[in-house]
Image 1 (cartoon, rainbow, N blue to C red):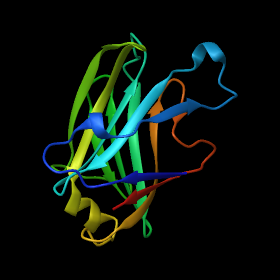
Image 2 (image 1 turned 180 degrees about the horizontal axis):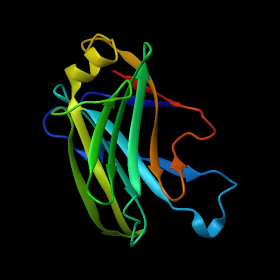
Image 3 (image 1 turned 180 degrees about the vertical axis):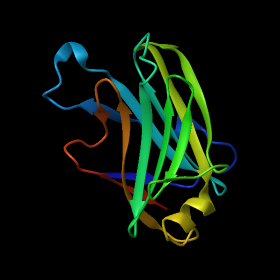
Image 4 (image 1 turned 45 degrees about the vertical axis):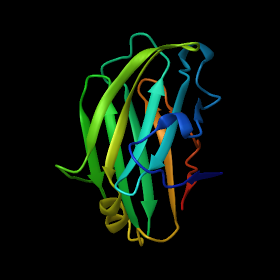
Length: 164
């Protein structure tokens, strides 16, 4: 499945982005399934994702994660319900690159928690070896983990994020 990401000008605006539904594996018992959603976008300066999970009291180890790969490299952005955030580049921690903040609230679908995860767009391009001024395709997934796993792609599959 392809998820197009166009450049927006100014500050990140989630109202103009499509929403990706995160779903559980069919083997997860119905009572353990957690509904979650995600978005990804970019400005000339930032690449960002927003992942939110509809649950009133997430376990402290619950986490949201965005994973992007290209040219043999992987960037993983994560935040936990306990307030911890991390960035891994090819499995190694990187400090001072990730900006993350938690979100919570209530809408017509219920109470939710989640996070917005942002990195400089040119840093992402250099880390995943693509020209930031040209279209590119990243493989990846957007996830809500622990205790149950919800993902945009399941069974080890990935989405294609098409950067324009």
